[in-house]
Image 1: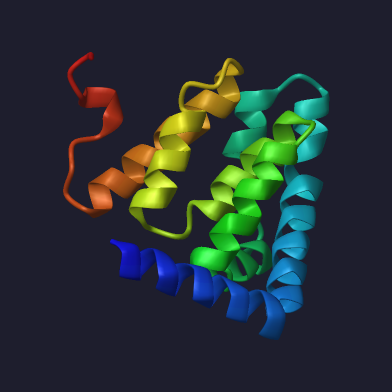
Image 2: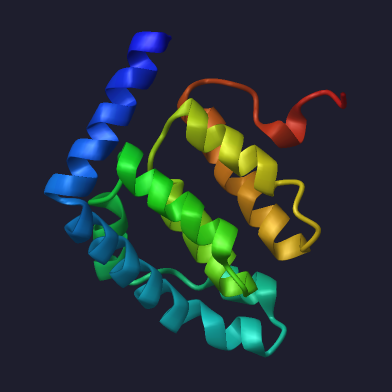
Length: 144
């Protein structure tokens, strides 16, 4: 475990110094593309409708290109600093491209968000990740 943490930290440092700006730029561009598509519906109070709008292929491509540890960290920071539903949901959707236990914990945290569209999206994304690894979806898990 300690070795994994050290390797992860060293990898993040290497990425942030060697190619961090390009990762941050790709994350920023993916977020801008997502916000351009989703924010108008959120601004009209149509959160669930906003989440049903498919993202353009270019945004999906940018998100897929950041689907590793450092990209996830940037999406997590973005979600934590978000001031709108659109920002939070875009960060969740784009960051969930990285399949890991860290991502599932992050999505689990947001699945309890007080804003229903945010919580529902996090639950759907978490269930999709759980399905990928053969685990029971959160929505069908026994209450705790």
